Amino acid sequence: MPEVNKIEAEKHMVAARRYFLSGDYLNCIEELSAAQRENIYLVGVYLLRSLCERRLGMWDKSLTSIHYYLEVESADVRARLIEDQIEKEKSFLKNVLSGKIEVNSIQAYKQPFSLFYNLPLGSKPKTKALGKASSFEGRLWISDTEGNKVFMIERNKKPVPFDIDNPVSVVPLDFDEAIIVTKEGQIYKVNVSENNKNLEHMHVKKVASLPIIASDAVVIGEKFILVGDVKEGKLTCVDLEDGNISYTWTPTDEGRFEPLALSYGGYLVAIADRGSNSVIFMDPWAKEVVFKEQVELLRDVEWISPIDYVVLSEDGSLYIGNILKDSLKKPIEEKLENCWCLARYEDKIIALDTALKNTFLIEQVLKLENLIAFANLYMLEKGPDLGFLRLKANLNIPAISNYEQKTPSLIVGFGENFLPSKWERKTYMNQKPVLEIALADNYEIFLRKIYTVGNVWPSRLVMKQGPHLSGITDDFVLMLAGLSLREGIAIDLHMKDGPLPLSLTMLSYISGGKIKFSSSHQSDDSKSMGLEGEVFVSLPEKSILLKAVVFEPLLAVFGNINGIPFRDWIPMDFLFNY
Image (cartoon, rainbow, N blue to C red):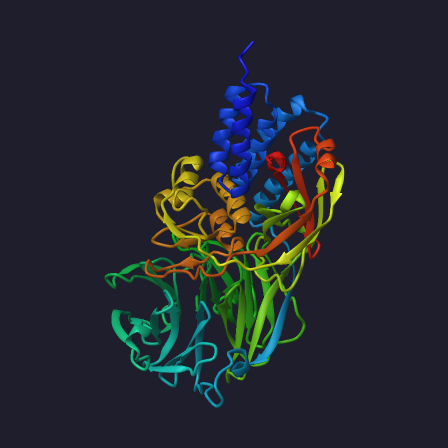
């Protein structure tokens, strides 16, 4: 029989529980391994290991650990619930990352343009012929093609005009840098850094001059821009570094091709083609049509997620489609009066009318009954004589950023005892780092890379596209999704010069990440992801707690927010260390 050192094993278990409660899951697993070396019969190791691996997104290992535990402690009902929750979360994320996220409805809210941006009185731009609009982190760019101007608009500020001959499209690279494309095919890179303290003048650099009549443009990587040409009926891909043409493209089927509008969401390029009255979805790297959808009187197209798109027609009709379902729906009967163009606005879409009189805010409403919230609890404080616990709590719901003033409902239990508890909303100062990191071959090595900086999980991960990242497996993304949603880590994707898999672009979307086209851009990390708060739990007398200890002691926290369920478990051995 192997030798057993129960005292040393318990020391490691105490350390493991404390690491777990501080969010240091990697050291928790090491301490659990050390405890098992001292006492091979300590089956509670597998229970805590499973919970630890669940928080890290290591789904298969977490299930293996809980199965080992259940082989010995088959009577532990909690372990059955944990096993079921792991399976549910894994299956849910697998579906979401493959694009299977159900939209319940689309809503459009009308508001005066000046009120939407809270512009100073009388400062609304006056345009002669509205071109395309684009938005980046709240800053709106509008092209006035006939008025030979572009306007830069921000909330609470007077719009700033810039003189440019016949602009048709402004494509932001980051907050201060953009590409401007003119109707005659001139391509400029402009910088409006506020460090110059003179926003009426911008630094302009000519990138290329194309013999085309341009309709729209979209950046597909740090180096490349696609420009629509309605004269020759083609797309031209231009290298932004040297101004050379990388390739030109037209659909292989015969017929007139008139690319009126373009949009790129990190996965496919959507093309509003007036020639064939259809939206064409093209892989810009393979240069192939993935599929097309017929729409009459096309005006504009914009991605609302990596798989969902919105189409605006000439008569103001709005349509929504999904690239995995090959179908278009008309979600609202009302027409958007005089609307001319679409633009992304945070995780929503805005539609602007020709006179900039009104703005329509368009957002999709997901089917809440199909969602799962991901909860994370940390120990903050235990009260005098163990009268209460105070836990830091974080909730993340994939693809939902607005939690309004919702307060989660809670049920907290220990053994067979239900404990009085309440959730108090609280926002913490975000001091977590933003990391730009290369992909590692091994997920556990990757975890150690992103945790070692300051011994905290980052608030954002910036992942640079390259051959390694383009080849990332769906299993790796599935594990990273579990960690990022549990810890509130936004995944930003820095697009360079190649494709990324759908699963990774979906992860960026559901985690609150951004698609970046510039290495100089730094995302705003002052706001934490998800819903933050504190959970207060009232504890009974120690004797009552001790009676409830049959297996490894765990505190169970079940709840829901707006009908979306969540479950979490944390170790409770610290109760007896006094």
